[in-house]
Image 1: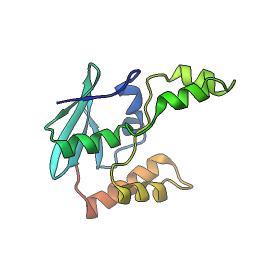
Image 2: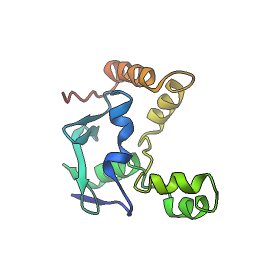
Image 3: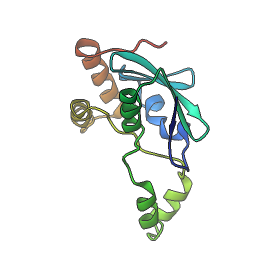
Length: 142
């Protein structure tokens, strides 16, 4: 199923954190796509024309993946505001296809907020990976 994402959107740029900061075992970059367990099912998310392909999908899965991929952000309003700032305008132009990701679950968002304080993002991903290993649903893409 196609999950439409407003242009401009660059899937690879927007998912950089899942590759560069280490795996937390909850959302895993594997063979050109993101893997995540949603509603008890392993879901694969890949780039597609006009958004992303989500497989397998359901309304619940698409809603969670939309949250994960930052669909609630009103980036047009942000860009309109940011291009008037002399510092931000260059940054906004250089990452035009970037859409920040969000945690689809409030508890997970809290864990991420706590584990990323005052430490490296790699260490935070490792800590979250240990929590997923012990208490969550681990994704084993290799």
